[in-house]
Amino acid sequence: MIKRVFGNCQIATMAIGYSLIENGVIELSDDVISWVGSAEDYHGDLANMENLGGRLVTPGLIDCHTHLIFGGDRAREFEMRLKGASYEEISKAGGGIVSTMKATRSSSLDELVEGALPRLDALIAEGVTTVEIKSGYGLTIDDEIKMLKAARQLSKLRPVTIVTSWLAAHAIPPEFKGREDDYIKEIAIPGLKVANSEGLVDAVDGFCEGIAFNVEQIKRVFDVAKDLKLPIKLHAEQLSNLGGAVMASELGALSVDHIEYLASEDTKVLAKNDTVAVLLPGAFYTLREKQFPPVQSLRDNSVKIAIASDGNPGSSPLFSILLTMNMACTLFRLTPEEALLGVTSVASQALGLEKVGAIRAGYKADLNVWDCKHPAELSYRIGFNSLFKRIYRGENA
Image (cartoon, rainbow, N blue to C red; front, side, top):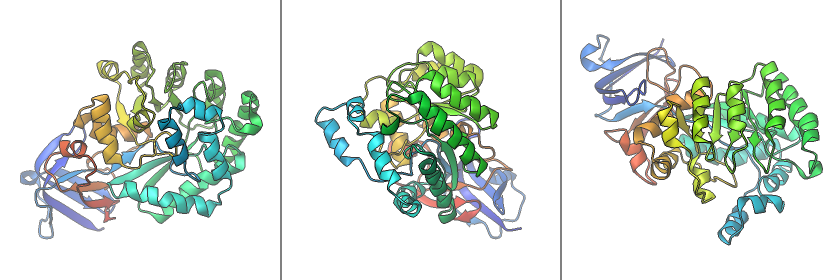
């Protein structure tokens, strides 16, 4: 057994809020945290203690909603939006997700992996140790599976945990235009079964919106997911309120994501079902939205709030978890404590993960050491990375 002991540090355990420990000690045994507490309570061997010089230690960060695998880019559409075109107008004109679909279909598995690595590396450089990655840009069975294979390959190339989500119900490809029900029947559902049989799926997602799929169509996919004993989550209430978030929550969804248009009274449904609300300030910022998610109602009803980059080529070309935290505070008025919870312990719940996202005995040794004294500094600075050391499963990485 390999033991490491870190001392002379401030520890934000994130067990309940910051749960700060002054002058703390963390002991690792192989890839697991074996002890955490104050130095005065530690009775182990300090002979080889790694002195962290008073620095801050947090759990490894978790980006619980990304679209990291895709072909091409949509910089031209960014320019179109600045000239007045809306997200929906671009989508209906053949842009948006469909344009990325074409580039993704024409990309090989290796090309998708090669294109995603710089984006993944940017997250890793800011202390991310767990990343969720969705399919959703292939929109054929083979191309959706190709995306998930690329995601699995990334976890072999970098010291990071990758969690995958089947998101075939993301957009309607041109060959199925006006035949959304057929797409669900012929692609989304059978493809899910194939991908699951190949061990490529950790969860099932969908996009419930006027430019995508309605509640009943998404529910058909989710019913199959439940039969396969796969957890579900949903892009919901981003551009309008179709009732997708309530449907997903009632089915036991891990999370509902975006939710700018979620009715305040519906936050009680999320609370009842312990569904996490995942806020995505990058998309809100990029699309210049005006409708804010019901943050205070989420708080009032004790709904857990996670945040994520939503890193994707169109609506959120954001691959910085630290900037995501700042945006969540500045745009959505989250506190720095809520933001850090949203990329640690609450984010782990949004992915259905255990023993990550907090610094506790028995948890995985995914840690970040920061060149700062207080965790509020992580959300406070803009465009500044204070990461001093990243530890993944007990090893410097």
